[in-house]
Amino acid sequence: MVASPENQNNPKVSGEESSSSSISKYLANVQLLVTIAIAIGSFWVSSKVDTAKAEIEKTKTEIDKANQKLNEITTRFEKNKKFSDEISKTIDELSAGKSTKAKMTLVRLYTLAEDPKEKYVLVNLASASDRAELIETVASLLEGENPEGLKEDVFTKYPILAAAKAKVARKIDRTSPATEQELNSSQSLDSQNDIKPLLKAEANLLSQLTSENLTGWVFLGRENRETKKFESNVISPADQQPISNQPVTLMQSANIRQKRPPQYYTLDNLPRLVGALRRGSVIKVIDVSRVFSKAGHVGVWARIEVTRKT
Image (cartoon, rainbow, N blue to C red; front, top):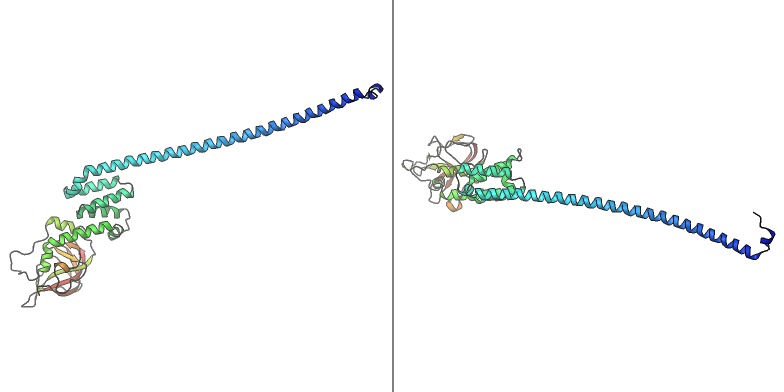
């Protein structure tokens, strides 16, 4: 639209039109800025909402994990308490109950022991009981977890069991008739008081810890001081000294020692007891040796391998 000559020549009208145009541009700029601000604000709010949602989900996941952990701890506590209660109820059976019942109780407790620490508690109980049948039972249970393993590996893995086994052996060694016979090699075979087999309880204790194929040294008999002939009430025949690789059946119970006794041995320096065999067990003689006891008598000892135990 073309301004009239009057408007063109009228300074007042021209200034008003210029001012109106500036206001329009200002309002347009303000509207643009507001639109941009709203867009930025919407994006920021949307971003904050997404972040808040992510934090909520993360917190929810952590709460779920914490609840799961709490449930696991609660379950473990309840199992431990049940296991502890069972031990408390059966402690008398394990320490002084009949042999078969004590062993069955130990087996039942083992089925409840899911944690390795609980199994080690049973190892400690068996060791502290001084009962070889419980030591043997827990060793067999542990061995069963590794079918390819050997019992000796169990005793190596659990030194406390090995120490308990040695303690039982020392206890029996001090009181067993077989030890008395080893020391008193001059006892008359004509005596009516021949060395009897180990008491049944003692024989069971140590013989359970004795494995077949075990090697060691066994007292077989004596050399007569006058005739120099072999005499024995431990093996049969009683007047024939065994030779290498000969199988021999025991007529009496016998101790198995780690090595040959020293010359002029006594109870204090007898080698460590590593096993015991009952009457009827079969051994293979590897080597035979003459050893003097402190009293000057000659004992006949043999390095042997256990072929069959009764």
